[in-house]
Length: 403
Ligand code: HEC
Ligand code: HEC
Ligand code: HEC
Ligand code: HEC
Ligand code: HEC
Ligand code: HEC
Ligand code: HEC
Image (cartoon, rainbow, N blue to C red):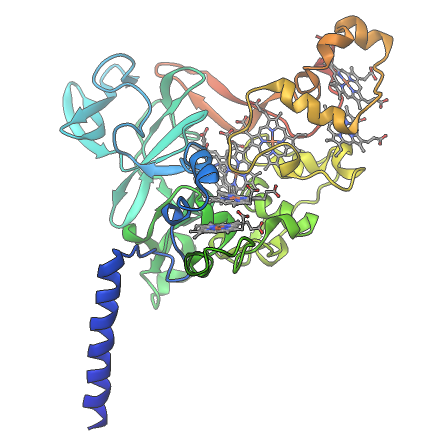
């Protein structure tokens, strides 16, 4: 009796629920019912949405459909030569893109571009194999407008076996759920947890979206849809009112390198959380520690006197979180000068550059471009490693200022 009662209730409920969702054509977010998805924000936050849609954050990962993939296919620079018998060719077949390996003119294997990572300086791609993603052996680099080895890959032989773990997605995507396949297996002890994880393709939310930074916002959306007259934000964390450390942590989550000991998944981070709940620091930020210009803006900035001796510098001081880094160096100089009014460079420095020009070029001298030690790549037919160059966030006085 009781059982049928429950069954009937469940049936009625499920009919009701399906009807509801059909009616509004409701979006279901892979992260769960607390999430509304970025498109639901458009109706009330068009400005932020339009900006963010164009940003590298939104493009940090994307399905590898044409339009999202950089580089030449079928013609132009589309071949990577390993040796006189072995080459890798970028090819378009029907609507898909492939890296195809040829030995002595014969096709040996072909792997499809499935997901792209990045678009600004470089783009690397992955293909699916047995429910996991693997990095394709060559990537595209904007600095050379060409294909070259994916970072850390050999230039003398093709390699297709580098698994791209969930960890990559935790900085480049808004969700990727995994299942542990060998839960009870003895192998577990010999392999790292990450390697045993398989990624559930359907759960990937590409790019760094609104709710990745702002936290789940379904309640916020529902509230404001029901109460259009309320103009103050409800059921959403206000990042503006967080303390400085919390604001910094919300960016440092993905911009402070990757050498901490992990305690919790980065995907679980919500604005207001403290990074120390997520990983234990293995390196201290003393001013002699060397941090790479790639992926570690936070710790480099944290070594600057500007950061240490002022109590207000954070990432938002110079960046609009919804936009890419500005290409206008003069606009940064204005921010520098807001703290450095009445600044006088000494005679020697002024001889290198007159004061008038200086006013637009603070960044050129005090945040110079540096080579990344973490990312290097090799061109086709080349023994030499090429460097990846980014601006340092360690604001300071550099010897090359004397150029
Ligand atoms: C039906 C309208 C509506 C929708 C849809 C909506 N919001 Fe809002 N949101 C508001 C209003 C009203 C405010 C308060 C005024 C303001 O800051 O614009 C607000 C404020 C915010 C704030 C600032 C909070 C603060 O106090 O600093 C954030 C962040 C935010 N919304 C995120 C989102 C996200 C993310 C989505 C989509 C998942 C979303 N909103 C969808 C109406 C909406
Ligand atoms: C979930 C991880 C994550 C979080 C959180 C995050 N970022 Fe990023 N950010 C990235 C990744 C990944 C890229 C590189 C995207 C690409 O180019 O593919 C990036 C790129 C950027 C860029 C360069 C964009 C460009 O094209 O010029 C800036 C600036 C930036 N982030 C600032 C911030 C700030 C400020 C915050 C905090 C409000 C923040 N990020 C939070 C992961 C994150
Ligand atoms: C990289 C992280 C990040 C992403 C992605 C992001 N935001 Fe924000 N957002 C912030 C931060 C940080 C602030 C606080 C800015 C400040 O303090 O000035 C903010 C502020 C806001 C505000 C308050 C008004 C304003 O502009 O300062 C709204 C509304 C908002 N975001 C909506 C959105 C929506 C909608 C999306 C997606 C289309 C989005 N945000 C994507 C980090 C992000
Ligand atoms: C701790 C966070 C983090 C992890 C983990 C991470 N990345 Fe990134 N990645 C970033 C940030 C931040 C940037 C952009 C700024 C920079 O280079 O400093 C970036 C840049 C990139 C770029 C260049 C993007 C562009 O638009 O120029 C590629 C490609 C990339 N990452 C791929 C990967 C892959 C593949 C993995 C896993 C092997 C990975 N990343 C792991 C944070 C991360
Ligand atoms: C939030 C305020 C603030 C901003 C913004 C700021 N600075 Fe600073 N900066 C400081 C403070 C405070 C010091 C330390 C002064 C001291 O100790 O006498 C400092 C120190 C410096 C120094 C001396 C560093 C050294 O190692 O001796 C340089 C150079 C400098 N800033 C350049 C810049 C440039 C360039 C920018 C813009 C890209 C900038 N600052 C933005 C506050 C700021
Ligand atoms: C004092 C100003 C300032 C502060 C503070 C600052 N940045 Fe930047 N950021 C810059 C400048 C200048 C660039 C270089 C833009 C360029 O060369 O196109 C930049 C570029 C970037 C890039 C793109 C790197 C590239 O070369 O494409 C990322 C990512 C970034 N910043 C993240 C952050 C994060 C995260 C924080 C906080 C930890 C932060 N920034 C704080 C000034 C600042
Ligand atoms: C041509 C390169 C160059 C440019 C452009 C430049 N600086 Fe400097 N800056 C230097 C050098 C070299 C020093 C150390 C010698 C000196 O004080 O002149 C210095 C010193 C400083 C100091 C430390 C002064 C002190 O007394 O400790 C600050 C702060 C500073 N610069 C800020 C700025 C700001 C802000 C801008 C942009 C308006 C700027 N600089 C533009 C090269 C430059």
